[in-house]
Image (cartoon, rainbow, N blue to C red; front, side):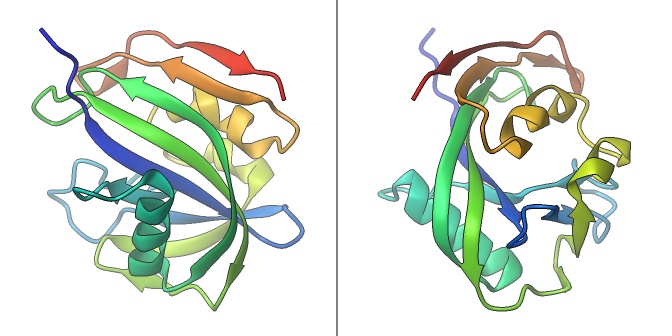
Length: 164
């Protein structure tokens, strides 16, 4: 059967000094599959939209800021991640410069600046703990990984890196 995942972006917006990251605490809708978790910003690509345009649109919609410098940190294939077992494929970005003042909340939850060192202590998707160190280290090489999910839990994590 062909692999036809839902395509999405996930962006981590860093403070100018790189010490904090803007995250959403998904606490607005109890029926949300992400309810209670912290995550980066992003979402599904729209038809005819490239991944950078999709990232910028999602961050504009979710945080009301404009991305000025973005870098692809990597990609992840998440077979079985969706509520109904749908496959997802994510383009993971570092947003290294932006303009505007981020919102404090949106319909999905509260937007919070979090110290990068504190992120591992937050309620996250279990799988995020595997790839976030690669995203949060600006010297880390670009990665491309696979993280199959079953029943909301990652089964394994494998990735390759691209040396610049």
